[in-house]
Image 1: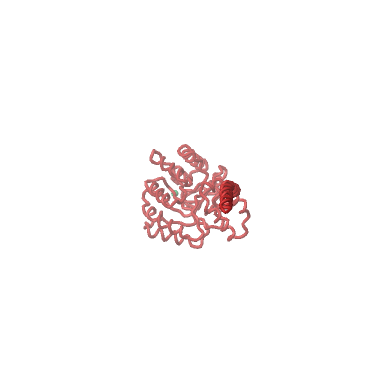
Image 2 (image 1 turned 60 degrees about the vertical axis):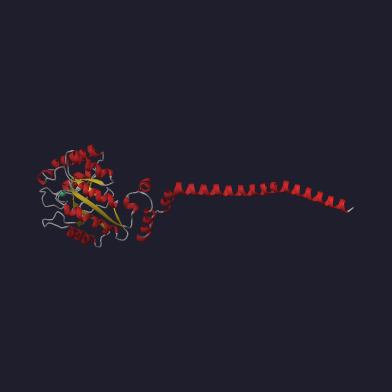
Length: 310
Ligand SMILES: [Zn+2]
């Protein structure tokens, strides 16, 4: 009898084990299948969110940023854009002034080039990743043409500063002024493909060399859709008293005091080595100023002028 019982128990044990071994994997398979499905759908959803965010990131910030109420808010808006790349800002089609509303804006401008110092200046600007504005004259020859092109290709603004810079020719008459401006503009367009629409008068708009009222020439430019700019900070690098690297740095620092918009005048001439030597320290100083940005001049830039035109 005992033996029969034992066999029966053993049978049950074997059958039970077989059934368990057969059923358990199926149960586990079903369990893990649903776990997996759930995780997969959450993963795909998260991926969608990430893609949507990446694709709409810039536009979303743009939409959220309208009508800043105070200078502080404007700085916050500007700070939103600060992390965007140059390409992303371009895509938003905002002017630098809109992107950097509420910032102190500094414009580095170089007159009278190109010269043997243009390439060293461009090298420094590239090293610090800083844009500038070059108000140029006409100089023929492949070396000069390459410099005009470098100015444009490296993201700087190309401005007009008359063909010859010879006061008696440029300011001789309204007709001569128009012809001089057109000649330089056409020349630069041919060399760089850029039709410059910003101008700086040789000697500035408040010069005492023109016998004709400067308003006449200002009107000529306006009719052509060209905006002219003077400066409110002078490096004094063209002063009759020769300047050193140190004095140029000092002049600029003093000139920047208390300004929220500063157009700095430098000269890009072969004789102005002190300007080139002063430039790195000046850029580092500006980059160390609070809420300050260095921008190239465009038609939208607030025109700082010595001559009043209303
Ligand atoms: Zn000049």
